[in-house]
Image 1 (cartoon, rainbow, N blue to C red):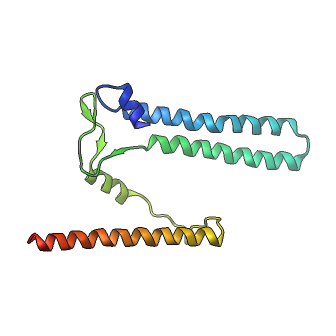
Image 2 (image 1 turned 135 degrees about the horizontal axis):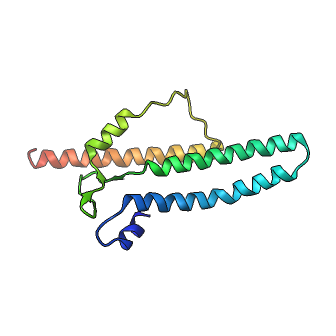
Image 3 (image 1 turned 135 degrees about the vertical axis):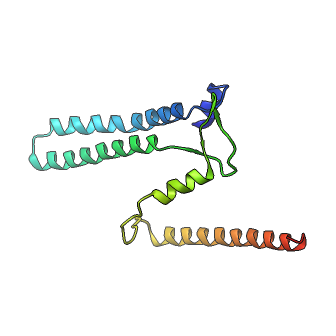
Length: 152
């Protein structure tokens, strides 16, 4: 999305255009489902089926509301704090601003997060996480060794 905007705008990335384009893409995916569900609710005669279909419609409308909110909160972040110009202003979020955003977030009140998956998939994800942790530790140890050899 951002690359597309950058190609369209020679003077830099327009974050508002990126947000708008992403919202259009996401809304175009959910609007046909909402329309189809609305038609089914209107066409069905039984109360129980209407209720179920209407509950599904409510869920779709909530998803659409979430997608709109999600796109409105997009930011551009460069961990090296390089400027990303948008005409004359810097539209990138600095590392300090990003930390402030994270610090101001409300914590989740859920006790646990349930993700429906099989034991096989859970084990596969756990193995991938362990491999990533090992890779991160190896990189960190390499940096420490390198710093010690260079006298830092």
